[in-house]
Image (cartoon, rainbow, N blue to C red; front, side, top):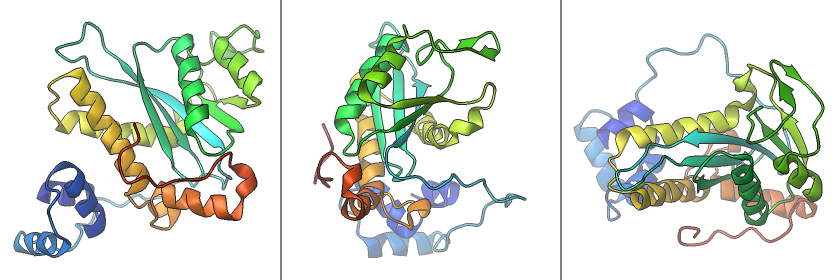
Length: 252
């Protein structure tokens, strides 16, 4: 708990949410506060160095602009090959959807988009990906070209009425929102020991559920993504295809 406080500088409520999910479900807020005081970390530590320039803010968008990327996963002892996490995050609400696939082929990308389109409560209008072969055939060497119309991911985007945008070549920071969430996944992979492929998958799903439903985001005025999505659904119902529900348990 002290490590999480000092390394990730979590607020008391954020830390309590993580503890309830992964460490000790019975921990009370007052007991956590007393423990932090005993260890001299009752106040959040200041970062070692403040950035010299403020981080670049994303342009404000309505729900439906989704960033997608792929994250390599370590091979577990009961697997004969590694798997890949396809990750999508909505720019406006920070809502995240993750699905583990056996490879990073175009067919896997197509399957992921089909699942994402069904899972998202809002209408997906725009998708931003990198220039990987699983997403497009619009890159030849270092130059872009027109889509051939044969790539299955582009075909599905067209069928669903979704605009598929690509990041500039050698500028991965353009897709930085999903890259930052991939960094959260990388931290989980570094700090956990997984017994099996099911253990890894269950942990990632639990974290995604915790992130969507319980972890306040500074960019969302300290709301969790599902809370921000509910507000959007109330103020802009035309952007949504069904009601936003905050289920009591993990999404399965």
